[in-house]
Length: 309
Image 1 (cartoon, rainbow, N blue to C red):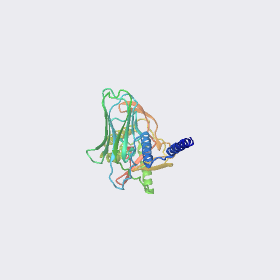
Image 2 (image 1 turned 45 degrees about the vertical axis):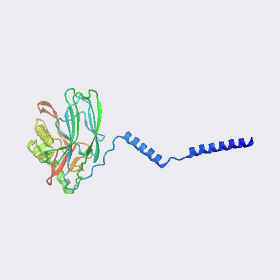
Image 3 (image 1 turned 45 degrees about the horizontal axis):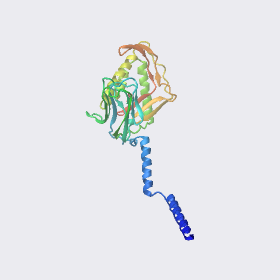
Image 4 (image 1 turned 30 degrees about the horizontal axis):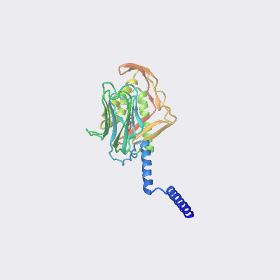
């Protein structure tokens, strides 16, 4: 009887020891690796697609492409968005036929185009991002999103990945001579406006418009129309420029563009408001130059339009 009890006690101890050993058993290295892979996959899925690196800066004198987004066709209603890598580049308004310069929003490698819209009843939608080099007749399409007319009658959100390899221009390094030349250019612009000299205003912008034509003909044509309109405004009865103070201006480089503005946020200069005909309709017009972009073209500082390049 005593032996039977002893055996039962020993069996109980052995079972308890096995249970404790199982509870204390550590996960293998393979288990840990699988768990870590699963955790990273879940984090990646929650954060969305992994984007490429920031674009590298081009070497001085290197020819680099420009990238443009074309919005063709139409959407329904007035609420729509175009997003590149999380940045809203178009929200509810656009200039028909004028592609948008988007190189600053691109990443080197993986990129993501996002859209929010509802389809027009009888017009399709095409969103195209293309890469252009100066003088090239053919442009490389990086992504072409298409939706048929009435394909999405209710608002839909779409995301499409694409690949790009942009480069950024190095920021212009301004010398004291550059700053003096830019100050003089701004003064010349103001004097042309103040003297209501439309021909001089057009001539001041002509080099930049022609410089853009080889890579951005749509923008060059748009700029020509805008400057013709500006020349018309300054010749309207009652137009006058308000006094100009050259002090307090700041010059900030972004690539080859230098933005001239005031440190206190007020316009560099502005005019009175006048009434007159503009593009076939009568309305109020005024010049208010909050930022004046300039760039060096063939070694000379010139006024340019806010194309971004």
